[in-house]
Length: 120
Length: 108
Image 1: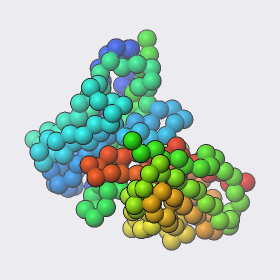
Image 2: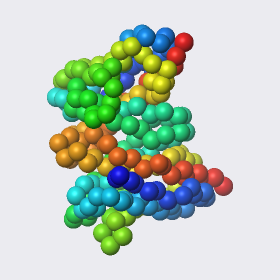
Image 3: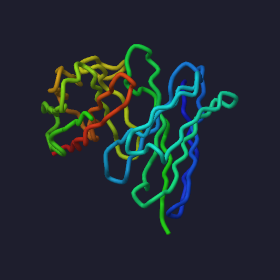
């Protein structure tokens, strides 16, 4: 079964940087891009960006451009999201997800989510 | 940027009812729209892709329709396990993804 295993919860102070991981299993890492999404408490979903592990190409949402870096390590089949200059508005659950079908762009496999709390 | 407006933000219905959620795009997005279900404390689950195609394993009481700027998501014969929040999501050619605000569905 395809799985995306995310790293554990984080507590950070304002202004800090957080780095989250997403380790894949049971498929070839370079076959499909990995996406990251943010969900603030009681709020909807916001797409942060994605990386194509095949070539490292990234695309970021405008709201996060300049403050986020998404990378893929093909030696460990793990994707990372680094978010800098954290503020209280970054308190959220962050999901990694992928689209495996190959014939549509729906996100059909998701990680369990990582909770990030930003608090002084 | 394309904006997705999803309505209603919440609704309450009875078991066996038909429930409809709409998603309006700020410009023509063809059929590039997906629908997700999210239960409390869980990751979202893909239900419908490309406006009207049922994801494998999803019950047939879930239906999607529409194209261009107006889309609908319908649950026929509402079941207690359908209590969740539902999101529409547009994707463009890059692809970048844009979500609707979500609809919280409760059972009366």
